[in-house]
Image 1 (tube, rainbow, N blue to C red):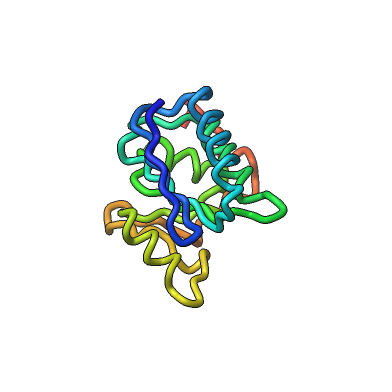
Image 2 (tube, helix red, strand yellow):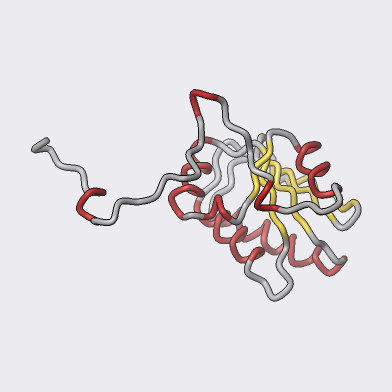
Length: 147
């Protein structure tokens, strides 16, 4: 797997250049572990060239955010499939999304940066409803052919 990696100001930038399957996600995790010996505070993961990313990558990201010394993760260029996976698992609350690498890096450099305040802005036709919550009754989530 081809992965471009660069560390600048305690921020690791990673750009995988092919689809990320389970084996590739493990490779990314191992590379992050090796590079994190250099004191990394944040990871900007540019998925714009990946095309596809499986749930194993999401596990790697969540592992990074749950470390004793957590690494802040920002995702750039995630596919609609991966964005949906993050939403479904509730990971969008832990992972910031940005339209470009530069915007993600700029956000990290701002004094007083708060991850919860920095979320990807969606257009009107793709508006993210932060107030949406699941229904109280689990039966409301089940699809029925009778309706």
